[in-house]
Length: 183
Image (tube, rainbow, N blue to C red; front, side):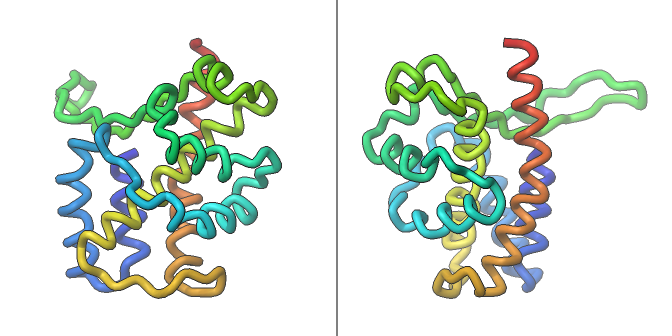
């Protein structure tokens, strides 16, 4: 999944120097991703809403729940993000060095905290997408790239969110299928 995240940044940022700066920051931040906190989750509300309406077809109110959970500091009890890398594994052609961002969603804690039992499979999908939107936009901001004001028609955001959905969705859905199958 890390290569997909890197590809999102490369594809969304036209300037190669800016793109490389973002990827360098990503490589630094990815090692401490488990301690990453969205500092101003309200700033992303409109982006989450528009992204959800366009790509996730959410009818469960996941944006409001995500923002509420993040604001009230409940989210870390059932949604955890970690990075796994630099563990060499034997493969047919030699060694490989897998690098992945792992997102765990503990549905039982979620139900216990929120009382929401309906549509449980949709929440992990939405939460993973929202987290990555905020994480990547914060990386771009850290690279001192001036982003345009958000609007649905702004080409940067149209491009960025479209690429993010395309690259991220297959990873999230694959992870959810495995989670559902092996729990």
